[in-house]
Length: 553
Image 1 (spheres, one colour):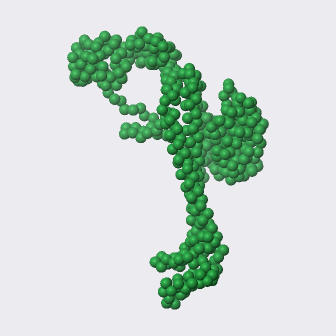
Image 2 (cartoon, helix red, strand yellow; image 1 turned 135 degrees about the horizontal axis):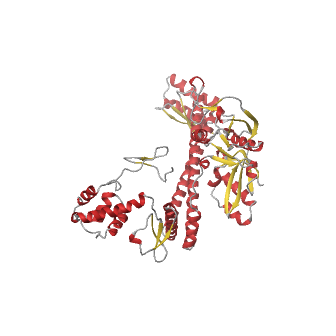
């Protein structure tokens, strides 16, 4: 199951990895209540209208409470405490008839239409309240709901796009732009600080002899009995005369025992209680910390830029919908109907040149799930001979894969290993049978999540090159991107690019890939490709970085 939102609540949680629990029941269960209990509980609502009492008491909602009253031919505004036993019995009888339709599976799902053929409601059974309305039948209630809410969503989108929503999105885009400016400033400041501290460290080493003499003078003359003011006065006089190393003197903090110097345009302090090279080391350490801060700032900046791009795409989408007819809007939304994911789409995957499904883990958890849940005895399991590599499984379905398929699976295992991040040209890969994998370590050895002990013979594929391809093809007028080993992608794509480990990363690389792909596609598809969100190809690029070596097919 997947949740639209995750939440902790008083009586249950909707969280990833937890068992799903239905909300606690409110009111009485209408399937289990007796006539006597039904009447007694309903009358307890006193002067409350019977339609409200029924809805609250059984938690069936206003629509079905009204339907029961309509079938029983009772006034829905009648107070609960004025109901006769005969009226109670009629209500109970028609409630049971309604419930039996659901219980026995005698459903008649349909969408109710108004006089303009607009969608009004969707129901699992025919209701008396809608007997004079046109309706559109469906095989299942899920189909009716799907169609109904696609239409409702389309109309909402059209209405929102025509109104204040665009302005709201633009305001959010402007907010993100302001954040980006602040983040750029933070990044620039961190870069400047890192560079300044590095330069100070270098300067101390470059002028170590002179600076040490100046430090020694302050220390020794103080020990000889001179006052700080006298030492400062003498050094200042020498500075005016251009005498080294006094020319470096700037000021002195008597309380902190810190000598401030100005060297090569840099002003910094030297603590009299510290060794000179220890001070230099401290500045280098500060430079390193500033660089680490830069990395965090850069990641935050990239994330905000991505959010801005998505927001601007939403603005363009909404603006386009304002010019579309309602029918066109509905058609566009219908195209986006979410298709149920196949099990392997939770992982990395590709189809080999000869048609075998090849699936890889994304992390320790998915590695564990892939091997334990989805790997069958006749499958083949690959792994790169390096720490930080996914398990890759060829789903054979009992057939023998070709040597080409095995090579492609090996390349997939190599490309998504840590070797890509480290910039290796090749790594060794091996394959084994599922029966050779075990969670039982030697003599109680701990085997972490996502890892398995391997026994028996390993079938080696030495020096497997690290390369991957990203391709595109047109299907029914729509773009479909594919990624995987070069030969596998080449056999299915209209155009592709080949990537190897490299330092170009993130949006810059992804945009370049899209541009290269667009150049080799038919003219009518080029603009679509260039305007495609980079998120559609991100998952195909190991560690989000690399270098293009072959531009096109």
